[in-house]
Amino acid sequence: MNTMRNTFAGLALAALAVLCAPAQAALQITDDAGVAVNFERSPQRIVSLLPSLAETVCELGQCARLVGVDRYSDFPESLKKLPQVGGGLDPNIEAIVALRPDVVLMATSSRSGERLRALGLKVVALEPKTHADVQRVMLKIGQLLEVPDAQKIWRAIDAAVMAAAQSIPANARGARVYFEVNQGPYAAGESSFIGETLTRLGAKNIVPAALGPFPKLNPEFIVRANPDLIMVGLRNVEGMAQRPGWAGMRAIREQRVCVFPVAESDTLVRPGPRMAEGARIMARCLTQKAPGARP
Image (cartoon, rainbow, N blue to C red):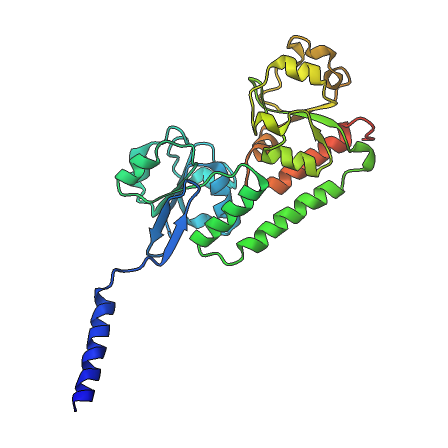
């Protein structure tokens, strides 16, 4: 009898311990700032403050969960219909709070994270800068949204970049390229995701990794480097040929300049799921404009 009584008592204590134990988060995400964020369930209402993050959510088939985006998020087309909440560096905090998001996705470089957290919102900071980062961020968002095939989607993107590289004829390889991201001039260096794509395409970046991913250059540096080919967006090409000494550069003199329309330029400078499309755009440029290429 005592044994049975002790057994029941033990079971009762065990049950009480389970009931009194602190609730465990169903989902925990550690973001790029090293902050662990707990969720009781996968977030259903998402605000994104970075175009590449919004595009990643949509690539994972979860566009419907987005309830607000930054002013620059315009792909896919459906995002244009969502409320805009400012930019990543100057978000409209009141508008974000009013949307009652389960999570706010933002860049690690944004300074508004602490204020949003102080208002009780969950924030996940992610900022892809390299190919490896794009893969990691896709898998992290896949974990957050409980999408099981995120790795499969990444493999398809990586394979498409490889296919773009294989499409370039041998005589178009080895071109020395200058990729201007913004007037300043700011360039895409070897260590940036754009620079990594150029390397995979067989091009040689005139901006070494030692200068950083997106350095601001002295224009004379570019003149001395004398690239074979220039890649630039339509927004930034105006006045390029008139810069001191630039008219004598090989790329300008031989009209080896690829000017990307706004939509293509946006695709190229966003480190996200459209990286494969960006590779195809650059591959087309190299095939048509590199020295030795035959359009």
